Amino acid sequence: MIELYHFWSSICSVRVRMALEEKQVPWTSRYVDLFKFDQLRPEYLAINPEGVVPTLVHNGEVICDSGVINEYIEAAFDGVRLIPADPLKAARVRGFVKACEDGFEAIVKLTMVKYILPKLRNRWGDEALREQAARRPSKFLQDLHSRGIRGEISEAELAEATVRIGTFLDQLETALVPGQWLVGDFSLADICVAPFMFRLSALGQEGFWSETRRPKVHAWYAALSERPSFKVATSWPDESGGGYQEVGLAQDRASNS
Ligand SMILES: N[C@@H](CCC(=O)N[C@@H](CS)C(=O)NCC(=O)O)C(=O)O
Image (cartoon, rainbow, N blue to C red; front, top):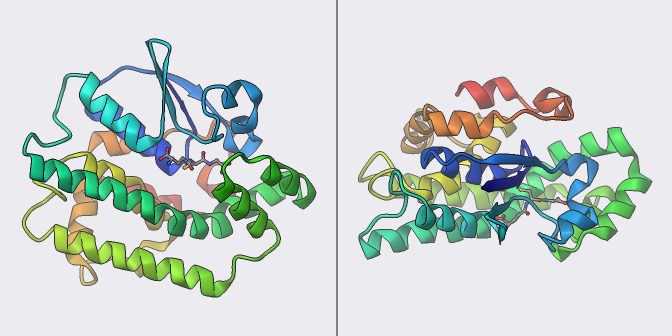
């Protein structure tokens, strides 16, 4: 019995849905609506004390953190290999997983200001959001949400986050010189970066890559977004309705590119 606690638009949830799909592992959905603060309910905090998605539960055993979960999926289930047998290549894959952890803050900041906050403001109002921000067990998310509501995430900070993302995309461009995927065959490296790309694409892909700007990233993303696992993972419905249209993101670009 495999249960995944997840949310439709969460980057870290997309990552795990994609790995499960690549491995053809059947799973049961346990939807955690971040826009209704389900992640802060006591019953969820009992399995994920950080109050974040995703969480995988396999035969009653709880596994948290998308990077750790994907390593587990790779080790626990048969199917296509997602970490190369070659130790050096495996290390390179884990390097990308680490780079994604490091880059998460930059992408979440951009997302928070442009996407999460306007939606939550419409739905709940600032006072309720302030209260919910203070309840977040994760210091990082507590600060981010609180600062966002107070309007303290400055343009300069967002510009800095955009520069960091640009540097990361430059690394991808270099990594893609030898072949179609980031490390040899398609791997957890491609999977961990995929939801970043999907989100950047929704935030306005043209600023980040095109046929002329970072062309290898452009070709890689085109191939990535054709994979059935990518399509399945990124098209999980917003179970409370609204979806990308409600949050003002260009879903057409995100799903068609
Ligand atoms: N390192 C964790 C990070 C998980 C995380 O921060 N998830 C976000 C969604 S992508 C979340 O649940 N946020 C809850 C919130 O903002 O309150 C992982 O990779 O799973």
